[in-house]
Each structure stands twice: as structure tokens, then as C-alpha cells.
Length: 235
Image 1 (cartoon, rainbow, N blue to C red):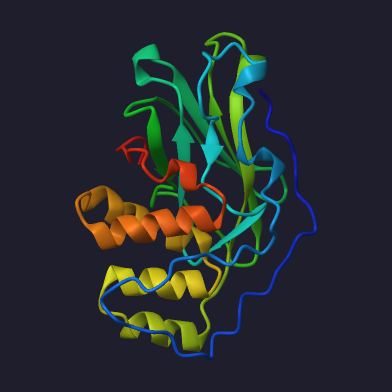
Image 2: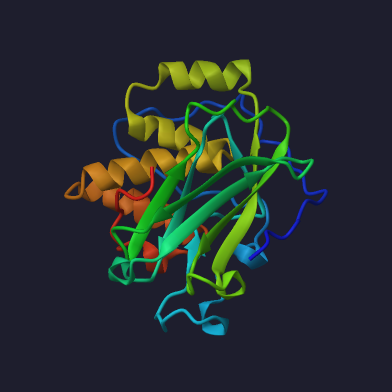
């Protein structure tokens, strides 16, 4: 399905960064202050209107807002895919810049699903530019030959610059869990989610990390996905 152009005028200032954050070894709070209490319309797919198999939970982008912020020039994007990888279907991930020029496009066979998967922009690409919005779309190819049948989700990402205060806080952090706190307190969704998702994936038996992961997803209305497996596709 052709990617829909959804660039708009949405903007938001990051929270003031001159406050002191707790730097203990335990996650104290990972609730994310969502800039827009209404989730984006395209956060969930529409598999019921395609030829995709029936599922209990929809294809879902793990995002809280239409525009989501990051410090990274090569951020990671996270999705819940409800369809079994036994179907040997392909997924497509596309990123466009503000001129609607394709920045990145890849098509891969899906693995490790149902479950949560991720795509990271490769280091071989030029980094996202600070202050610019990029549109991305993740599509699951329900019918290999009919793109109009794709189930998809989409939103935007914007890279922002770290203030001197934020940089100092991150340099003072000594554990990934402390960095999660700092990212969340400063409205940096991609950095918050990626750090905590990787901790959750690599430390499946850690109760503190599991609790923080659940709290984070509940804070953006996706608590029902907290127990889904986090797989290796498609980094």
C-alpha cells in the first residue's frame, strides 16, 4: 500500500531539564508523560479489513503520540506483530523525510511472532537530522501480491538535541535503568522504550525490569502487550 503522507504542524517543547532526577539502581518510575492523551489514529493496524488472518490483538506500534522524540541519529522502532511467523510473510519498513524523499526502505521475512519486534536504522545511513520530522510506516504483507491488503501502522519521529543539563545527567548515570528514568523524564520516547525493551529482552527473569516495562506500557495504554515476547526480528 502506498505510504500516506501525514506531515502536520504538531510540535512540543521537551520538559525543562534543570531538575534533579533520582539515580538509584532501581527503577523508581517509568510512567511516560504522554504529550497528547489521545493515541495516534494509525498506532493500530486494520487487519480486520484486509485478508490477514483473524487475531485477538491488532498490529500495534509501541508509540504514545503522532510525533515521538529521540536523541539518536539511528533510532529503533518497536512493533507488536500478532501474526504467526509460520505464515512466511514479509514486512516492509519505510522512512521518508519532510520532502517525502525515501530515507530508508527494507523488506524482510518476519520471524519470532506473534510478539514484539524492532527495526533499527542502520549505521550505514546518514543520521537523522536534528529538528526535522520523519514519517515512517511499518507494513505487514497480508497478501504477497496485493499491496492494498497490507496491514500497517505509521507515525513520525523527530531527533532533538540534548541540552547541557541532560547531557550531564546522562553522563552521571551509571546503569541502563537510570538512563531509562532520565529519558522518560525528558520526553524521549524512542530512547526510553529501546533501553527498557532491550533490558527486558536480555533479563527475562528480572522482576524490577519486568515491573518497569509493564508500568511504561500501561502509561501509554498498551499494558495488554506487556507480557508479549520480545524477539530478535528485525534489527
